Length: 394
Ligand SMILES: *Cc1c(COP(=O)(O)O)cnc(C)c1O
Image (cartoon, rainbow, N blue to C red; front, side, top):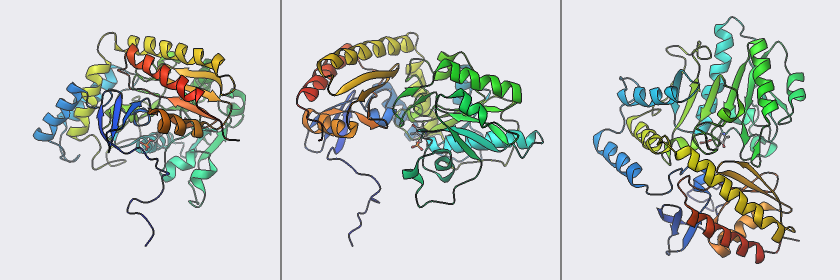
């Protein structure tokens, strides 16, 4: 037998964390890492945040899970909080981002079905997007490496170049249900959509009664300095898929929708055994208790500006490596002139700095939202040391 007990689908690196503290991770042998990856934009409050940890401990001891057979005071309260703080009128809780995307796709299709237009079942998606690994989500994700060998995929998806309004509009026909788009592409290389693009999609959705579905799994929940990124685009979506940061490390997601968009999602149309269980709701509430504190989002924006300025200052000194900085809030990317994966490995293995590689040779910088100036200073030191000691692969 040569297969490993963990199904070998990940190229795991040598970092083997066993403990976390704020913005730091500690490995099996006590090695210390500055964690500017945050479990891929998940640990918004860092590791072991006191009020978050206490809330989960209390809830574990009180009630973890009961199923959706019963009334859910915990789910009602957290859904109400999401509704009060967003465009949404209603929420379905999931256990992951891909499931939130699945619910969003189903909600969009079902809207047209319930409106007497079952042929309007096709979502227009975008190149270099990432929507997750379920069959529905890879069908929406136009990337060979995630699809090879998993065919047949689901019909009902078309693809246009990202941020190209004309190309997207050219795909609209009588079967179009709407658009599925990340306001800021994450895995694709930290690419924020332009205002004109999202506003243009909103306009055609209004004109033709289509669904604007945003995948905010990575860019949502205060990461960009607003609860959801759409707030910075002067539009409101019909449906959002949210996950990653929403549970602060506890696996959960949510599909948010307007009353109109959710008109087909009636009793029996969707479900999940775990979705929205009391422990997940406690995690979400504990995250929101922190991020909705007055001044928190402003601080994320200000910290994001300082981190961005720090990165921009690095470029002139290392312009053989780095090209530009992009992103919003604390969702930042450094575009490299060579393979970003090799640089991420170097910073990790030689300098104890955790980052995440993304498409388009971008290094993702996704720190916990609770970082202070001292972390930025430490990061700046590690980044410039890493850049100085680095030789790009030939
Ligand atoms: C991570 C991600 C997903 C998938 O989330 P999972 O929790 O891994 O299923 C979907 N969309 C976007 C934009 C993501 O970044």
